Amino acid sequence: MKVIVAYMSQTGNTKKVAEAIFQEIQAEKEIKELGEIDGLEGYDLAFIGFPIQQFGPAKEAKSFLEEHSAGKNVALFITHAAAEDSEDLEEWLARCKAAAAGANLIGVFNCQGELDKKVADLLLASGDPQLVAYAEMRSATVGQPDVTRLERARVFARDMMKRYLAHG
Image 1 (cartoon, rainbow, N blue to C red):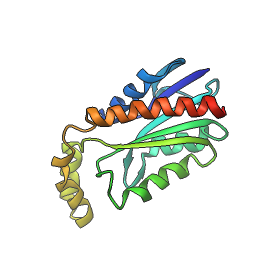
Image 2: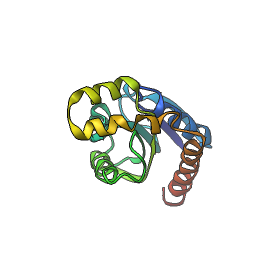
Image 3: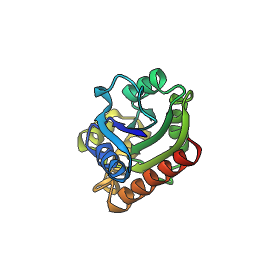
Image 4: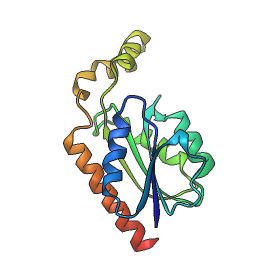
């Protein structure tokens, strides 16, 4: 069995989650940035991670999933600055899942990451009330993903491996 953990991370949040997932995989494995791989050929299971940007999957991740995930066993891991109980989050996650519509989606993990100060400043300057409100919640995101969220990512990785092995 060969597994890849591929991710895109602009501020380090998704990279931390990718590394936590990678540590838990007990199989032949690789970890790479999403831009470093040409596809998912040769992998039995792919963990694909990315941040939510503009209320959906980051463009690079969306393109990759649409082009390369059809017929592949995929587990998504997604970071965002929203609280995990945010009403908006389900819609954003649905857009992420839709990008992998052709895949055999084994599971989806999401967790809060720290909203980058530069991004928060851009949101504040936008004048859009919704974006300003998100920027003003930045202080609640500082230090995320924390130890608890990274442990949840490790549990997710173990569960996805068990699920794949049971049904693969």
